[in-house]
Image (cartoon, rainbow, N blue to C red; front, side, top):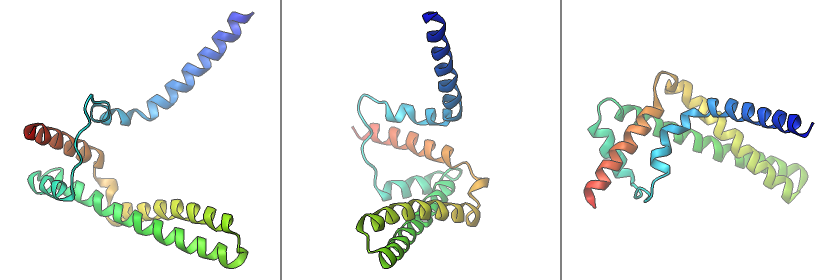
Length: 146
């Protein structure tokens, strides 16, 4: 009887694990950059600008993705400050204001990303491919340095 319950749990876990592995398989695009023996050196904004100028296919997509991050950061700042101020005004509770700050930041970032998605039409672009191409470019460039 012990064997059947163990196989049930093991089977359930394998199914659960398989379900999420299938949905998060896009993360495997980055594993060769994240699971290296020696990490890639940091890049600067000028390095990204060099890539954008040098790659006519993926450069504009990466530039648009960077612009979308500005929308997200602006939304996060506005959301965090406005909800924390609202919570502080009506409750005078430090922990409530702090939680409102965090929640408002998350909501604001999400809302800002959605605004960017529609405004910049990110749904038409393959931003992940552009990011992977940048990482490949940076890997080859940084190996050329050392």
